[in-house]
Image 1 (tube, rainbow, N blue to C red):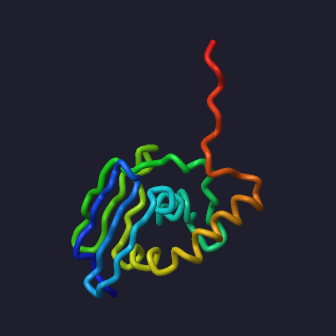
Image 2: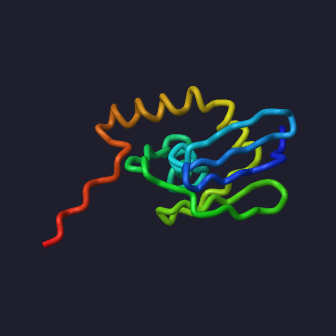
Length: 124
């Protein structure tokens, strides 16, 4: 599998750009990475436990932490930080983005969920 040659965090745009050594380049919205996190919170502990995560339209990336020579931990500004994105998984997310994103949107719609966070109750 290809490995990254460069990762560029664009915090203001809520985007991570990754260049791979095979010439592939991917731009990932923070929301896409958050809802596709390899963490147990999203993926579950088995094939039938995957969770559709709503309300992440405004999520950003607070930082990146290298994990050995094989992955990066993405620190999201909603405090989610348990997903370790291997180079293989990032490459797969890039290659499958055109299929995964519409599938995510369809899953939200089917479950009556929204990309927007729940409205905060008004303060008195």
